[in-house]
Image (cartoon, rainbow, N blue to C red):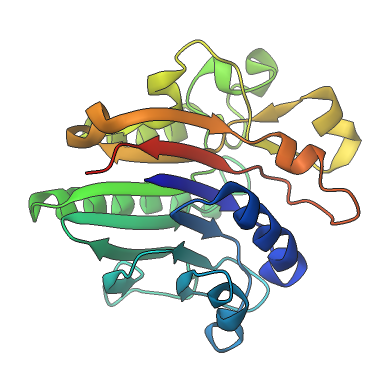
Amino acid sequence: MKIATWNVNSLNMRSQYLRIWLEKNAVDLIFLQETKTQDEKFPLSFFREIGYKAYFYGQKTYNGVAILSLIDLNDVRRGFGSDSDEDEKRLITASYKNISFVSVYVPNGKEPGNPAFTKKLDFFDRLRAHLAGLRKNGKSVITGGDFNVAMRKIDVWDPQNLDGSICFHPKEREKMKEILDAGFVDSFAYLNPDKKAFSWWDYRGGAFHKNEGMRLDYILISTDLSGYLTSCYIDRDCRKKAGELKPSDHSPVVAQIKEL
């Protein structure tokens, strides 16, 4: 299986570019974030034309997640499923055989000390519990998304100056580590432990061309699947070669897993 994750930063703006990328890359399944599209306006037929089923959970202007898949998925669940859900559409789960697929968009958190930062840390706790619950129910798990945290010094362009700032704060990094410690592997780091590569660059200040970025996007797999993982890479050229189609500020992450 070839699996990808991509924060597209608005389907309305980038559905055509996404479709071109899918036609060139032929992934079996892709997790999407920041679709910013209400469910009733999701472009279902647009992706059906190239063979993809779509499962989505969205809202106008902000947030929104989806899974596009060449295979039929079932047991689709939107959000965490508790009474406190869900003003912000940030999580969708679906299954195929004994595998649960989860697309997630973790809140940015604004800045340390802001109430939004506390909500971000709480979201990590809920996400860890959700993923652990799937494992407890006997599911293997593959989750892809924009986690809005860079874990290691190698995952940011300037670790000394960025340390303690949003997306590279010790508390965020610890929450991400807790998810991995619950039985998950960061596919990119697992196969490329010493490679410095980013998946997000600010639109401002020529950050992309200077390669001043962060690795905020992940494909996590449960440890029982780690032996099936054969490759994982970030498609930086997707942003570099967008041409007249304005790119997202994120690039896709792609993983290859042996047929299970």
